[in-house]
Length: 239
Image (cartoon, rainbow, N blue to C red; front, side, top):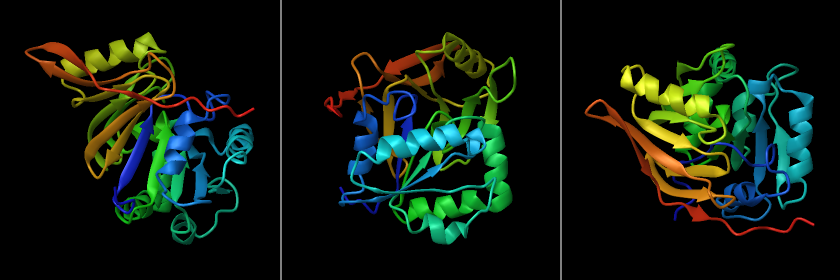
């Protein structure tokens, strides 16, 4: 596969911040760069660039063959376009998606990321960093309720992360679909990831047995979940 095609990897949960002992999903993302020592930059905007999240990122990825950086938006911020276009992979962390997108839009980062994606820079992310690429997402940005959020629209449809870990999300997604508040899309378990090439779903992978992803839509006023074929990634010994 041509690694210059637009690619997005949307993790429902897992990766370095949730499965530090199991780097399978992160290594899958790194391998997509198709080069040794790829440049990887972390965007922790959704967590307010939390130091603890940055520590997890650097602690995990320094074990692998890659060049690391992060892109701060709450302290001194570098030239965004120059920084983004020096990368092979942009990895977006979880947190408050609504606040993240508001900050990105104020900095015009959303347009820079679209241009980067179209040029073949790989976009990846977990939770907030997964749903942000879709037209809509199910978000817990508001205290006490799960709601629909209009996102960037690089990918069509909607996305709901943590599909198995948080039963409220699955129920909320179904209710939103039945009420016509959200478009059809994908539910992604923790430990599973959707890999899109261009606008098409290329592959679904997982870091552990039992992690699934679903195409979710309404058919005659009933929510239908189509379980997608998942490739279980090989386990990796980081010891």
